[in-house]
Image (cartoon, rainbow, N blue to C red; front, side):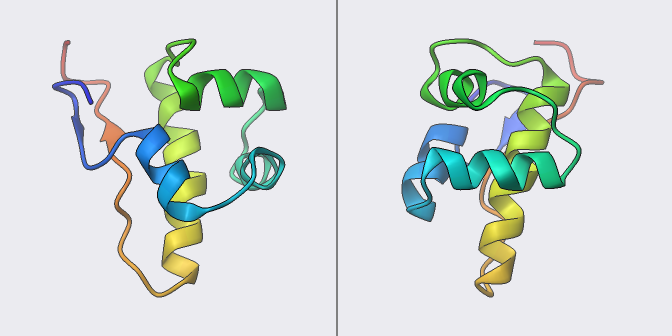
Length: 84
């Protein structure tokens, strides 16, 4: 988690969700994401660092899943207005 995020990391959110990467990728596409499945997996695992926009799209896809389950939105968003 960086200083511009509040909430859990993408990796922790993915682990908590129990989703597969293909399922997360489809959910990511549904919120206007455009990256490929392997790139998404690399971002979630921390192998690549997403820009704020990509991070927020992945977080949105995860959080919508949790909301569908009647839970809160635990994955942190990055505020691009806050410098790291």
